[in-house]
Image (cartoon, rainbow, N blue to C red; front, side, top):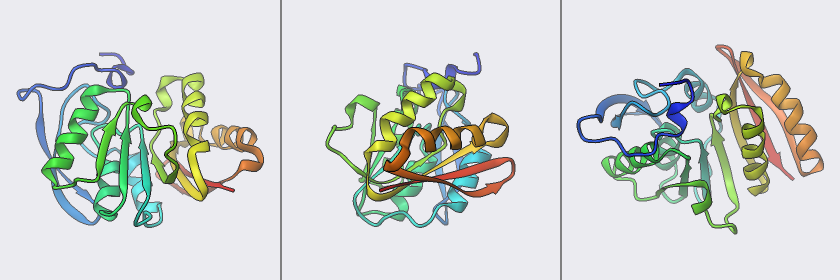
Length: 203
């Protein structure tokens, strides 16, 4: 398996491939299912932990987006925090999306929709976006991803992105500010354990 294979695994994991993992999400201890072929299958990765510790409380209602969901730690946290909101878990990896659906059902969360990017209706505007974006897909693909989704923030809404400092967080900060221009403010709001948390506030 190459470094990028976990972004593109096509088939859901079989029952033999799935395994149970105990994690701490949204202030509670829960059990989830993971499998090889997805990002960080054995634990909540450090970048996601930094993101979840530093973001403000999720909006109680509206459409919330976890961009690049993996098996779902961010989407599940959003859904646990905001049971009246609609949480969209977006990924290109069908195995990851299947795990998100299984984990939402396991935790009794009926407000999670795990979908491919093109399955999100065009008229949905997001009250919040939380993301540990897939930096390793390459700069061009990452830039296209962010330019597709950041403009879909509702006016005044915020996105929070966690990016490794050694993976270009500061240059991405500058690039986002240039690309979004007057449409949004881009700030670094936290730095911990080698990661930056960037906040994009839609105007």
